[in-house]
Image (cartoon, rainbow, N blue to C red; front, side, top):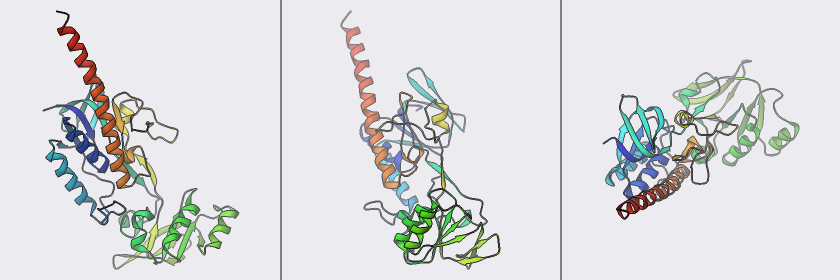
Length: 310
């Protein structure tokens, strides 16, 4: 079978949630999944009601089984080309096959762009972390560092401070405004000015943060606010409008500016946690099905009129 009501591109929380809703609505659904979830390095996920602490891979495995139980289908791979084909969309996959779908939902997520600091990527999602709401409770009370490499670093450090009294912000020289320095001092957040060169690891654990001038600052955990880059090649290829920051423009249901194309989860909302992405997938699926019903009604009326004019 190569023709579907909906093709869901991306098999994370948003895509699986949407696929389940649509499959339960008796739609034929194909989930195209590259198998590269953003949170793969994380041992556990948090903040998901009733699933707090569950390994991310387990959530996806359970979700896939649920979707399959309602008739949803899966294919491993990536979409290499997407285009409109009459009233449908044609999606070319990496293995050379092509599938068509009446509607497309893109849930391909984003990737985290990190600063060029030696050892940072290797410790990602272990003791180098990005989301205090996802990981802060597990490292509460420990010696925490915040790598300041963005304009919002001081504000980010203030949020991280919620989980520990021992927080150090590593800031580039001259990057902090006077009011930011005062606010940091008021909450006993230490500031170390300088350029971070590497994270120091001992016995497979973060031990310190090293600066280019030779100083080292002992830290057990390092929070790094990443730069989010959407995996939006399919959306761009289909001609969806992007905003000034490069994120796809959607309405409240996830519908893009291209009729028949929706987006949900981190590909359109960089701040969405797993539970948020799942909710956005459900919202998009309900809107998608309603859109399909409208088309079904138009087609049925056309057939009805043709049958009754002869």
